[in-house]
Image (cartoon, rainbow, N blue to C red):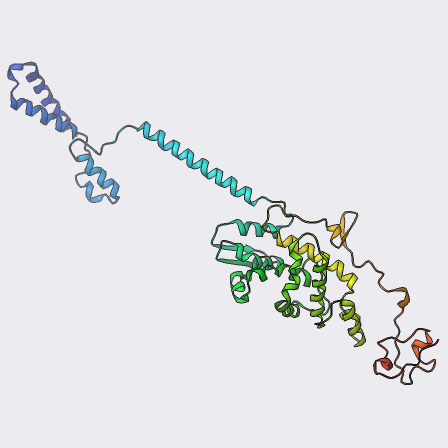
Length: 377
């Protein structure tokens, strides 16, 4: 490199003398000046002679070739301030757009949900992801994921459950495909789950989800009203009571009081009897409120009635379920007595006659069709 510089300097000194003596400026001298200028442009090509063989990056290879061309079209230049300004403005616009999108996305996920269950549904419905994994161990969330699956943009969704040592991934999309039900029917699932037993509502005595599910597959329309409006109509109450009657095997009954009488006559134990119509009314109200909470999981601002009007009462700072507006046992039946007389209840050996009360439907003599003589006390 030093030899090249010294050689160019000596050539420059000689050409300078020729330039000062105009008489000696011939065509040959001018050609030598042009050659010297060309050699000066290639002076700082300090790359290794075999540099092209060792370069692996295609862009670096092209840059070195461009640098060695006449005119150095590939040389390093100063910063293009105009280009930098345009690129900076474009980058600022892009960042502003992303911030605006992020703000809109966050605002779309904001809501007044008091439960993490429904907030999870809000996020699942609003996301554009094609696959979702929800970490939860709650049956309530599984039911809502099935009911809301048709509103989600994702094609596959799993619920991660189980323990740390034994994980379980439940395919929600697989369950929806297996059920082969219309979205309109799946939307009623939260109502069914609330009425047949959940975290905040009790189950129907003597009947599991499995037996209730068989009734739901045929008579699911009876529960549609539980999700339609914050106002619980009389027709919705009647339909829900009919559904409960069908769960207890009374297909033609419209009141659980009728079902209780028929089951009591058959000597079914009290713990397996359905609730009275009055107690069922408060139960339906609580189930209706729970269904409303779940069915508005995809709404940012759900509209809910006061829980005090939906089968609960406030005691100090806690909500306590109201079981019934009637006393547990009527005063006329403070002691339930039935007899097993084989003589037609003629003598004082009849427990009903001894207690000075008339025989009832559960007395064996009366149910067997024999004439009961317990008429006077």
